[in-house]
Image (cartoon, rainbow, N blue to C red; front, side):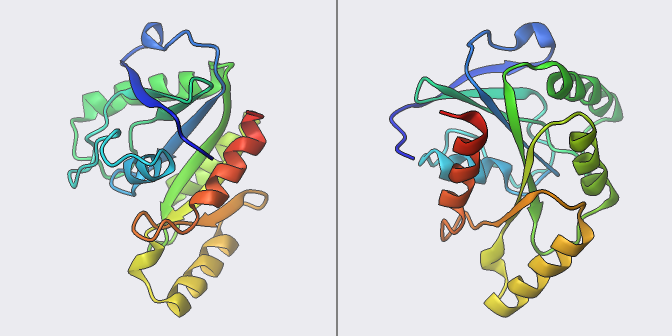
Length: 193
């Protein structure tokens, strides 16, 4: 996919803040510090459009990015071990769930998991939740460059067996760019752009 433009549009703290652009949307979800921002930056051929941080829980709003004036990438707050106040995390849940359930332009979710970790109950529940609401989801296993080829292959098989069936699983590395084209292929398939 050739990227001609990619720009930050808005940070949404409540549904009223969601952009009104009628573009198909792709949401990116995952635990804090799993590589969401890095994946988005690689897909868009940008180094710092989406801010990356070593501090879990940095993304606390829903962030929208317009790509090529025909698609919107949506960066959701990370879940899991984010070191943010409980009150803030309690605000995320209805905001994120409301976005996922009610957003008519949402075409798919890219769920990012760290290939080095077995999926948590939260990860599995989230995939089941997407299925319940008929939200197409693709699983991207990030950080494959951190493991040897043999270990990576074994770990991918373990993860595949532990997840609910039916989701595309794509190994990805922000360092080597492995999987970038496969992720774009799924995005194009579900958005129809």
